[in-house]
Image (tube, rainbow, N blue to C red; front, side, top):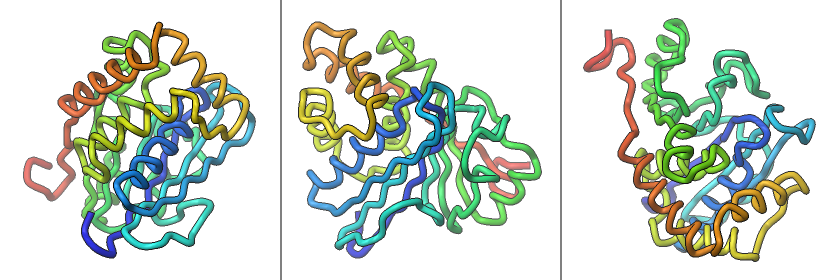
Length: 229
């Protein structure tokens, strides 16, 4: 990250997908790389498939802002229903995206309407797809690892932290030194770690998952851009 650079991230998903955990891992990794960060989750009903958002701010200088990220540089969409069924707290899903910002969508096929694509083209935005849930199921054996696959897509899209810091952050998160936003988040952590005999095995699988998701990242050409219509 360049000097004085700030990155604002909005993660939009559904309950049970681990957006809160992903935000914590990313923010912690930034700190381990000597950067400043704040992490804030937001969710209504604490239940699976209810809308959930997390906000991450990363900067090379002190971060004082907290709470909702209104004008993100990066938007991460953890579930297609955020777009196709409006299951989110921010409408449209790209509301507030800064000019030149990026969107990462968990899907294996384009979901964004032509009208929204035109708006995004006007913003000079970039849209990326990664089949995070499919990859999580194949590599880690569970859709509960969708959040780690999304972090893999983000790392390939924009290296906000080092890979070493991401790994250290996951060890800390799943190895017992947990930041717990809610009982539901803690239960999800336990469900993920419970699938492995040792935390080290899970971390190894997560690193494999991050690499696989990064390799599967695809940029979708917007109207008026090279490769677009």
